[in-house]
Length: 109
Image (cartoon, rainbow, N blue to C red; front, side, top):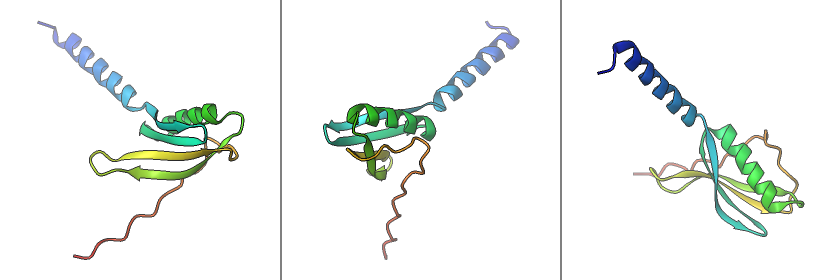
């Protein structure tokens, strides 16, 4: 049996590791063509956007790219934030303000 201080240390270490993992962001390529593609963001938005910009720049080098659509796609609980981009546009800086899709109007009941 673990002594109390050691068990508390292990629990605190595990919680710290989980919080670090939660702070990470990722960008998954959903579709890639010579003319553009779709990237899905997951986790912390700033890190995920940075990785998405790297993937888009690599796919479209040296022509640059432009984000043409950004927003939540799919039906909850499986909805995901996705970027649609086209190669050949001017590069979008990583610190640019994301494009927000307007919310659809509420349906009448």
